[in-house]
Image (cartoon, rainbow, N blue to C red; front, top):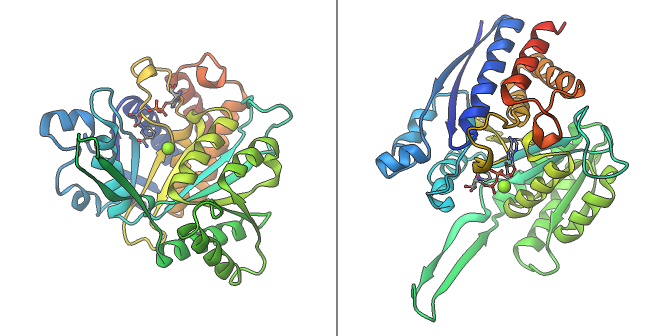
Length: 356
Ligand code: NAI
Ligand code: MG
């Protein structure tokens, strides 16, 4: 029996709804596969915990998580707690504390989903965005001075290090090399940002030498939004900074039909710490409690988790089941359907049991 310790942190809003759905699907995979066991432990951290204890997770939170093989995360964000507190109190400390420096965001148009672009169907848009996840614009460097006075200043300093850029570039080239097209697009803004971004371009060229079989090109981030929209077939693997890739991957999710289908993996490639798997979306206050959250992103990220754990057959089985269900038109309202979270989850569970 191959056993995996999984920490679930559903947290806020629709997080608990989609993680409950994901946990059911993992149980179905466990039964259908045989030979795998998930030992799941749940953590009630998040905004409710904050309202009781004044912190989003206990001070020894990372120590508690360290022994797990993976973390399965919902979303943070509450209407009555400032967003920078929820994000910096839970999700970012895990990403940064566990040095999950590669944020991997696959996007494709799933069968049965009508994307917003004309003439763009399944197969026309198949990307993986690699987001630098440990530094850059979200390094937390900066401050405020002269608060409340007319001369108040706020700085938000982007930090790019040679170590940080080289390791994400290497990860992205390696990932591009593993995909059939062996093609990487490096995104920067090295015309207007002439220090850190020029260093990105230089390091990309250096790392490219190690991967002679990978073709690569460069894009400025603003022009990249145009290329993603008007020429999606021209892209495959993409690497960008923390901020740029954050924005581009929301666009990618929308172009693939909905944020509700977009997954992400926060990976420590060196496997010193557990990696964390989550849907891209947030806590979606507008639909919380209605039972209509799309669980597909949370299922897809579970497939990423299975891949990371080396359970590639189980991962493929899960994705095939998801695609069978979307292809059959069993969809939540965000992707034009009438099914609710439970109906989609039931259908995926059935498809897992029915799979060969
Ligand atoms: P959001 O992703 O929560 O929602 C944006 C829109 O997409 C909403 O209309 C929502 O209903 C819809 N949507 C999102 N996920 C969906 C799903 N699974 N099924 C169906 N529809 C879905 O982003 P928003 O509204 O900007 O932020 C809400 C809160 O979430 C904020 O507090 C924000 O800080 C937080 N947030 C947290 C993230 C995280 O935990 N990783 C990521 C993004 C936002
Ligand atoms: Mg985002």
